[in-house]
Length: 445
Image (cartoon, rainbow, N blue to C red; front, top):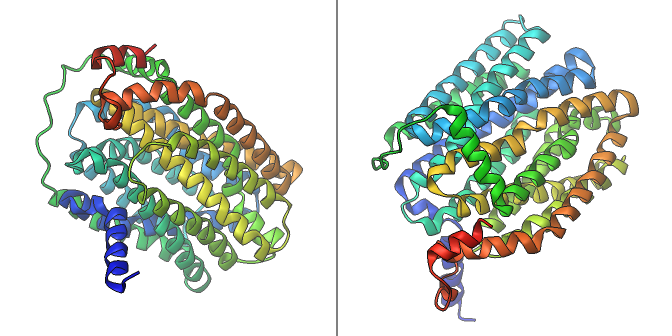
C-alpha cells in the first residue's frame, strides 16, 4: 500500500477512536477528569495498603471497601431521580468539591500521624456517599456534552479509556510514593487533582435543557423507573448480570493486597504492578470499544467478556508465580472493563430520555452498589478459607451467571432490535417495518 494511503488510513482510524473529542464540552471534561482519576486510583491503592499495614486483617480490608460502597446501594436510586430533575452540571461541581474535602481530611490525618482505623471507616463511608450521587449524575450528564448522539457510544468508551489509563498510571505512581514517602502524599495529590475537574465543569457551555415535568413524590418516580427498567429485557438482564458479577467478582480486587504480600511475597510495588496490569488490560478493552463504529453486536460482546472475566479470575486463584499471574490479570481487566462499558453503552442507547438518570442510577447500583456485599463476603471468606479459594469460588460463579445471560440473549436481542430501529441506530432496516408506535409497543411486551 502507498505510504501516503497508509498514513491517511491510520489518521482516519485515530479520528474514529477519538471522535467524541471534537465536542468542546466533552473535550475539556475529558482532560480535566483524566487528571482527577489518576489521583483517585492513587488514593484507592494507598488506602488499601494503609488498612492492611495497620491491621493485617483481610476482614478489615473488606470492611473498608464495604464502607466506601454501601452508601451507593442505598442512595444512588434517589440520586438518579435528582439527576432527572435538576441541573446536572451544578450537581457535579458539588460532588467534585466534596471529593476534594474528603481527600484533604484523609491527607491531613495521615501526614500528621493522627490516623486511626475508625477515621478510615468514617471517611470511606463519606466517600461512598459522594460517589452515590456523582456516578449516576455524571453518566446521565455525558449525553449533554455530546451534540451528535452518534458519538455517545464513543464518548462512553473514551470515559472508560480515561478511567483505565488512570488505573494503569495511578497505582504505579502510588506504589512508588508509598514506598518512598508514605500513603499521605497519595491522598494529598488526589485532593489537588479535583481542581482541574471543577474548572472544566465551570468552563462548559451547556444548552438549556428541556423543561421537565413537574416533580412528583420521589418514591413514585423511583417506582416508575424500576417498573420501566424491569419491563424491558435488555435493561433487566444487563442489570442482573452486572450485579451478580459485582458481588461475585469483587473479592479478586479487594484481596489484591493479600495476593501481593502473602502469595507473591512482594510489597506496595508488587500491588501497584498488579493493579497497573489490570488497568492496562482494561485500557486495551476501552480502546477496542472506542474503535467500534456503532452499538450493534454489543450484546454478544457483553456475554463473551463476562465469560472471559470469570475464567480469568478462576485461573488467577491457582497461581503462585507473579509473572504468570500478570497476563491473567490483564485478561481479567480487559474482560470486566469491556463488559461494564458495553453494558453502559447499550443502556444509554435504549433508555428514554426522561428516565435516563434513574436507569443510570440502577446501573450504578448494579455494578458498584452491590459491590460492598462482595467486599464484605470476600473478606469474611478469605479470613476462613484463604484468599485463593475465595477468588476461585467467585470466578466459577461469574462463569455460571454469564452462561445464564447467554441463554437470555435471543430474548434480549429480539427486544433491542425494534428499539434500535425506532431510534435510527439501524437505519438500513427502517423501510418496510411498521410504524414507530407499533415498534415501541413491541419493545415493551
